Image (cartoon, rainbow, N blue to C red; front, side):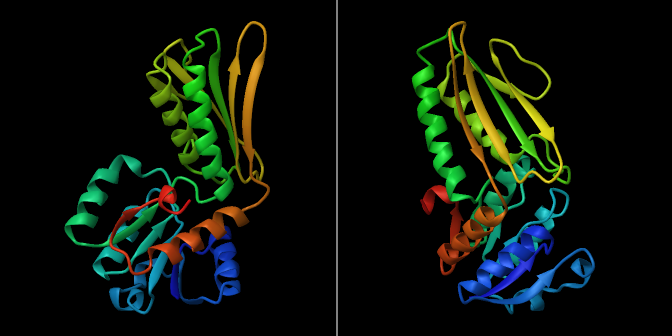
Length: 235
């Protein structure tokens, strides 16, 4: 495939390595220095785009890909308040979008474990649930998209929790302790605490390779398809 990389920071460079190793071509690299000059004709040189930028630029990048009729894989998080708008535009225009709060295979398996454990723990109100997430200091959105996905899974499975918060905790509120430290790729912990014991599950990323590989696999999956997809369609 001919791939356009929209966002050429640390993630973009990692995606480039993996894409080349899987015999794909990088035909366009978009970063802060040339983003304003990239035109629809430039995007049309690619078969697919992989987008990892910021919550402030992701919507315009998605729409540029739609205008070029270019399937787009979106790894940026922090924009899901506008998801319904983008979904409507995608479906109305017969476009192609793949999105995920996290592209790591391990994280998506962790999602399944989290849902199952939360469903089990719904029957045991003596356990209080909380979350912790740690990311590098450059990450803009707080909490992370992955943490929000995990929190929503818990809320969906546990009747006693109605919402999440990074500021308060109560019998109805799932507290997320969101930390930004050094260059941590991503750590997520869900902890159930009772007066007699604790139960804890954790996913800890060692580097960015898992996220990058997942995004390339998503691009391979999306090519030739129309509509909206996520990692559950791949796993």
